[in-house]
Image (tube, rainbow, N blue to C red; front, side):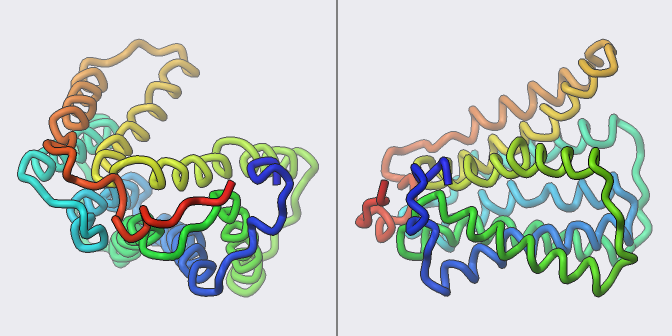
Length: 250
């Protein structure tokens, strides 16, 4: 509501657009948590972090004004390599096949295609992300009671959930949508590899640990890939030309 200036009508969107939002927010998280239950967390997280690379590679499929250039492919692979170094800490990972990896891969595909398809539907105000989240949250509760042992939440749990929803997790969805509306999807995908790097740096600060050479090199690789993979031409549209003909309501 604050994002829309308390104009609740901005959160009302066509059914196909709402379905896309549920596909993205609910589908992504449902499969990601299935992956974490079935497969080792580190390995599942690595597979899931293919979504920035998928955004770079699939952008031309969804955005007619976007082209795929070899520097962007190389940059995406380099950025993913940096993410692997950060997530694994340079340690070896399990290579045994696990069905959870398929769920992680599917979750990556869902987030990448959701992000790209938001430019293929009629223009909607970023405040509508609240509608996506509301329905996705309700479906998540249904899945919890149907598939898991019901959990009793303490007051501290409720406060933490409120903080996560209003703070880093919820706000991230709004900022992500706002970024996709204004920037180039491929460049945003490359910059997304900064996420595991940022979380690792926060952990080092929280634990009062020194920056390791591996994290430093991974950071250079990720930042360098974002620079190397920048759009070589202004002809590469920031978003789909069809979407660009619609002005977002404020």
